[in-house]
Length: 434
Image (cartoon, rainbow, N blue to C red; front, side, top):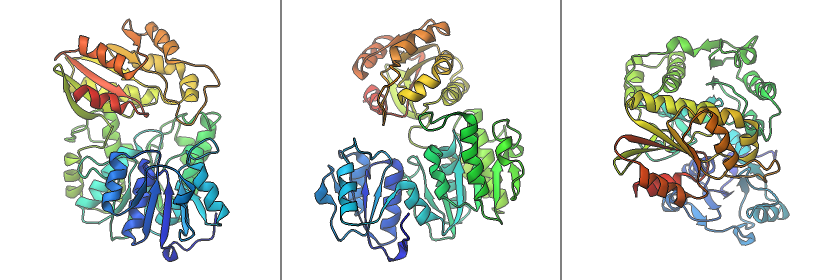
């Protein structure tokens, strides 16, 4: 990494600024009175918002976007030799402009704070947003970088003026090791990001490394009795607090499901460690409105209720189905699932088939490739056939339009539709209620 003094840098450019993390960090630097620009393949509602806030947005990637006046270029990890943004990264290196990936820049910006980092295979976005609400209600004025849009503000960033920063920490490629937390939350650990990690032990080794980076006066908040987490937190030099002791099954949460009560328990454990007013904590949790694409209610279609969810791992699918069953015990559940990445679909093939089988019916969409080529040849059509072992109502739709037609012809007020996936399937959810 370049030896940079971020306080002295006045002009920053973001390659892939429309990403959820990238846009939050761009907003942060803007609040720090820096001149910020960014590029992406196309305009979106998010990039339009950034532009209205004062960030110069380029709707395409081009060498001309990189000028000698720029002092730092931050790029998304989606940038590689095959991507459109690579031309800008090459130009920056040609002009000898320092370049950092998103997490390198995030660490540079957030490590000077009293840093609360939220890591875990599942639940880190919701927990980060919950903690932001809690610290806000407790008048602690936190800075926050969240991996989604808070429902209450429609923003993924909160500009604070206190010592506190609350940040979502992603384990992909061990990226979270650029963070040096004072408080580390580990929501849970499972095998995921199979294009990078070889097995569960490999994932655990990354989390262990992060836990060992916690400040010597800090703390780790985790479910220390959970089998996948226990070896990660055992024998640490800092205290470990088991957040499960804080679970409240009677807590009035707007977000259904046991997984959200566990997220609330982890958030409460952090609040107690920081000696926050617990009445404020309860008030914040009771009013927590959720985040974009996490069991997000979109509206109705033919009387059927439509929800949009980011679930892209079997455990997340099961949790979302359980939440829907809790909220609508008498309705039929239909999942429209867009698998995310070929490697994940291949590695967790049987688990995906079992998970979706917990619904009453499922429609599979083509796999969202993200950053991959399909080297294994796995397909959603194969997954739809496999899932017939667990549900008699499984079918494949080769497009959003086909899935929408199926739903419009078969759904009514007796149904709940869960549109799931980490790709662009949110467009289908919008179309259903549009």
